Image 1 (cartoon, rainbow, N blue to C red):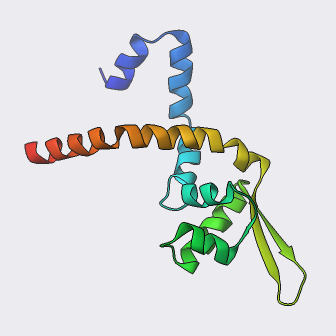
Image 2 (spheres, rainbow, N blue to C red; image 1 turned 180 degrees about the vertical axis):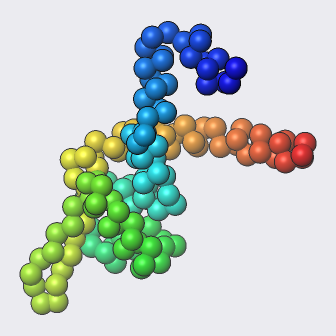
Length: 135
């Protein structure tokens, strides 16, 4: 019997529905984590929490990110509805980025995740070390 079947054998109806949700294709949580779980997205969202910023302001706020990577990250966050890009028709053109309602709604879950990671990172690293030493 596979682990998946074992889990399902002992699961309540509610738990089974939640498990089926995770195994669905496409799975919403995997899809979202795939998009925001990269190296830069959370940092961009955090930088925009304080308000509207221009590209170079974001570069300074984030620090060690290339122009190409920031541009790619902003496009993905805009595509997914987390960030709004506004082009002001001026000479030279001025582009500003801000969080959308969806982006703002993600801030609290993001803070919770960041807090959990901060609290548990040492234990995770120690576990990795123990695992590596046991191999």
